[in-house]
Amino acid sequence: MCSVGAAIATVLISEFTLSPLFALVFGAIIAACVHATFAVTSTMGRCASQKRFKQPIYLDMIRSHTPVIMGYSFITTFCILVVSYLMTVVLGHPFPLTMLAFIWGITVGAIGSSTGDVHYGAEREFQQFEFGSGLNASNSGNIVRYAESGLRNGYDNSWFCAKFGGPVTGIAFGMTVFLGSWITTVFDPARGLAQGWYSVIAGVIIVLILIIWNWKIEVKARSDFGPYKEDKSEEASA
Amino acid sequence: MIDALTANILSMVYIIIGGVLISWSVHFVPVGGAPAAMAQATGIGTGTVQLAAGAGLTGLVSAGFMMNVTDNLPLILASGAVGAMIMIAVTMIVGTWVYVYGVGCVPSSAKVKVDPITKYRQDLYVSQGTEGHGLPTVSFVSGVIGGCLGGIGGALVYYALIEVGLAAGLTAGGSSTVTGHELVGIAAMFAIGIFFVNAVIPSYNIGGTIEGFHDPKWKKWPKAVISSFVATILCAVVAVIAISQLGGI
Image (cartoon, rainbow over all chains, first blue to last red; front, side, top):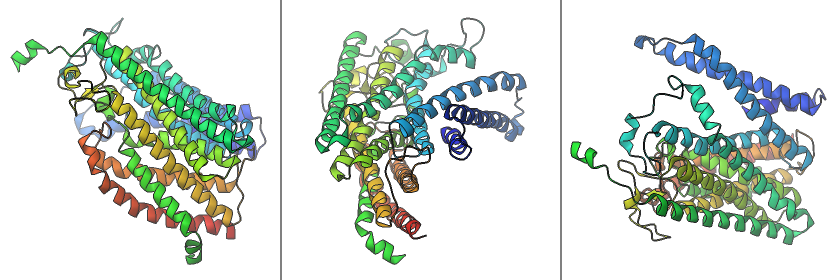
């Protein structure tokens, strides 16, 4: 999706010499439209192709969710395009805009899928269990179905994720971009080979700090939450 | 066409070594797939290819930036490794925040009884019915090693392809336009393609979840590495011919 936006922005900037800001916004809008096409066709296609199950297609759901999906898509694509544009033009990165947008799109997908997902997948759905007690696999059949008002729906999970899952995804992506380019900005390899090696050493030190931090969190979690308490009643029933 | 291959035999060797390194690196990355996204398996909750590609491509960005200003091969490889290590370490530390502060489960592994690095007991902390959750220290270190190898592999492939292009008379380097130089674009494209090929092959070995180098599945790596070796030879032939002919046209 980011590549779609970046390709359109690249064409607008290099062939039609439009202002970069307009080109990036326009590219992001087109990418949002493509995203909406995917969203609608996949929702309709799943039900329509499995017609024998006679599942209804909720048109009101498509009407209400598609603009939200497009909105999220626009924001994400635009931000990644701006990052890629700044890296290409201001920081002088050799990769073309489309390539950088593609790479950052893959990276933000990996980060979002590995951090944001977990939050609503594991936390939001099991709120009736005591925090820190671990997650029994059999809890999967016993999720929270009611929201603060009415039944759970997609908006409700989005609202919840916007409070912790979204920000941590953003922090993770921001840290990746920032730490990745910070080390070569402070120790600029253009000033000599030694500076380049300093940037490598700085990166290794950052990684070591993160390893130790993870270990500290692990130790803290072990002491705070304690060993997993076995569910006696369930063992009896099994 | 044959001349192009024989003239760039060293670059092809670099590409093949890079591909094999990428394939090996994927085995180190602790991915848990969909179960980990529900905190029911140890590792990061996303797909193998997605995560390995995310880390390796971030390394490629760093290596590309470094290659813009120097042509010292060890430095380019090191910066690629550091870029990938930073990306994967940041993803894992943020994953740990979510698992510990968001979900409330102790990082633990169900595949081993004690963590080989910290010597902590693991089996007491695993929730019933799950295969562990979160990222214990051994998985974290393993992921960093995986990022390092993947970054080196990606950077090696990119370096070799740029060298092929430079030998064919194309230009590389920063251009401060949005399109960049054509050699950089096509070399990065081929590097990404070779990266994906070699990230997909080991995922059959991993079968969805792996915890790191302490996992029993990790011992299956020679199969994937041999497959990648064969696949990368084909990729390298295509890439080298395409790029070297680009200069001649």
